[in-house]
Length: 438
Image (cartoon, rainbow, N blue to C red; front, side):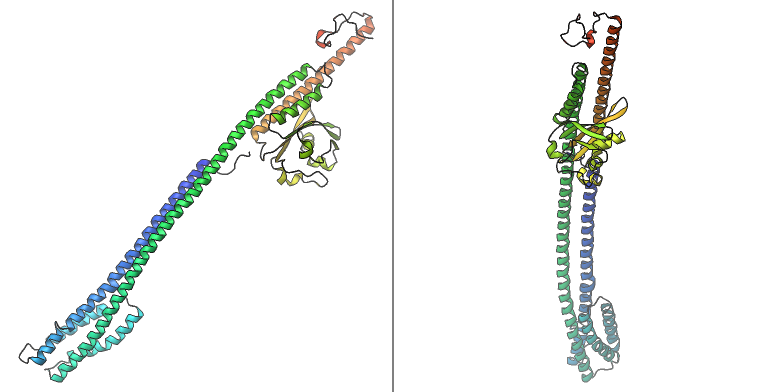
């Protein structure tokens, strides 16, 4: 399992907290804005509807039966009652003019302006008739009263319009409040939904990282076991170097087997260089399925050599890897076998003898990003141990050959058949008194 990449758990949790705070702040701001809208509508309802209605009622009260209407009726029916004099008429004109002027400064809609345009001339005519008021005659009183009634009918229409408009504004305020509640609820649900999605994502990533960490620890543990078993195998083969001419080959085969069975590799191979030729001398794993069409021996100029990790490691003297070979364009070489699915990571580690690169340990893994720095370190250590074993095997063989040559020369020189081979270099079961064949 490859380790998940991206921000750490702490960074993701901080991101979740920031997002939640941002959404809560947005919800609060939306609620505040909607409250301001509702308050503005309520203020408009009072200022633009209730105040004008109150002003129109003042006009109606002044022109109605309580003041001007009473005076006109009384004067027409009771000649001895209180008269409507010029001063009283002037006060009524000033009072109604002030109320009207305040009324027309309020907010108006086009339909209301049309009613005002019809009312304004009639008010002007009433004010003019009352301003020119002289000792009354029945005709003058009748004219003023008719104009008063006409103005009051228009005022009644304006009041009815204001009440209808107030009802409409109230409905709008209720609708705005409902919209605010719906938007607030929607934003809260959206906040909860987004937070749950992000939390789920963070938890999923955390679980992936946890499982990847466990898998990585298990892989490293297995690699340590593989390294330990490899060292044990190296020690055994070094001890058998003189007795087993195929000790080196058995060592290669054992290392490949340990890498696959214990180290989580799917395929392992040892490639040795012979001049400009390369040969896979040992392997373990389903090579026919993971390396279809790969030759056992190839030259440095072959297409396969340009895509072979082992060849690259041998020629460069450093480990080579590709953690995603199916996406690596450098491995696509015309004429070379195509990397099949299932090979998700591949690497090769150079093997040295007496300081010179003589081969490489090649590994194929079934997990992307398998060769992380820790795995590379362990595999470099394994390749170093194997290189040391190759040096030791060669040195032991060279010493054995040199000693055998020296003994042969000494026997020829002295003619003494009783010269025996030291026990350290004597095959098992051979008598100390055995005489070497001449």
